[in-house]
Amino acid sequence: MSLNAEFVTALRRVTQRWRTLWDAELRGSGQTLGRSRALLILSQSGGSAMQRDLAEALSVEHPTLVRLLDGLERQGLIRREPVPGNARANRIVLTDAAAPVVQEVDGVSEGLRERVLHDIPRAELETALRVLNMVAARLEKLGTAPEGGQG
Image (tube, rainbow, N blue to C red; front, side, top):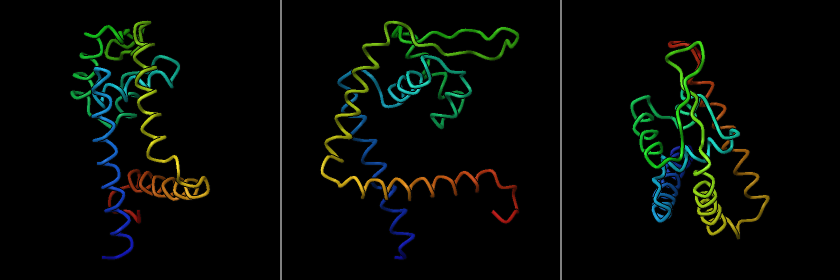
């Protein structure tokens, strides 16, 4: 197996395992991984975001996001606010009831990060982060290259 193939296989394995562990730990807070990610993104965005921006940040399609938001709305953690002048757009806003849930989800997330990464030297993490950022930038560039282009 080539080094590039080994890298991609390891990245996929780590990503899948991380998501599996994160999801299992989040279930204790009554949230799914998808809902938790949405809550954290909204919190990091100042408490609200446009629905289309949230879908992009979560890398999900509209129907998936609608189901996720329906669940959060039923829990009283978000509300949808129509955007004036655009009947098809919604701003998703965290409610006051979301604050303790966001705090719990953030704590679970931080706990997992700490347990997994605590003894990896900072310089190693910085190198890994630089490499992942380079890969992400190349993927972004390839994703925006015109079809049939040099991408």
